[in-house]
Image (tube, rainbow, N blue to C red; front, side, top):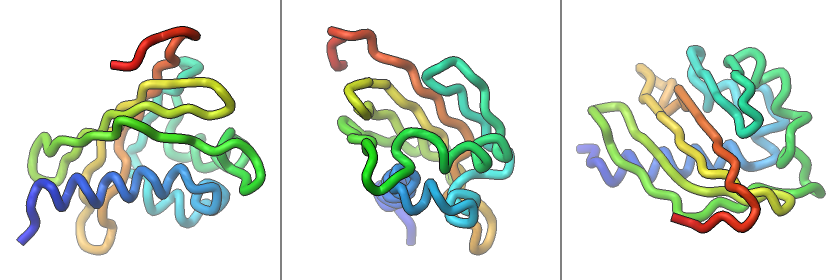
Length: 130
């Protein structure tokens, strides 16, 4: 039987996988982790759809083995409803910090957990955590 902590742990693993350059460079892997109805509001304020994100992801920060990597911290999650998990955390990449929020939903069958919505908000220089 699945428990809320199990669901949160699975979603955290999936979120971290999306930060892995190998997943970011693979349309197939990223496509399995993003929901077909995925939407993101990035730290730039730009709105991204599933197709736009899959097309751009290999060129984005954190997508190369030898380049800067996302450093997540303070990652926590809560089950909002059966099959829906909300994660919040912070990242640092190339000296830039952002607060992040992701909604994940569990797909039918083998689809597993997929990111449905993501938002990143830049932390101003000198901004405090919390």
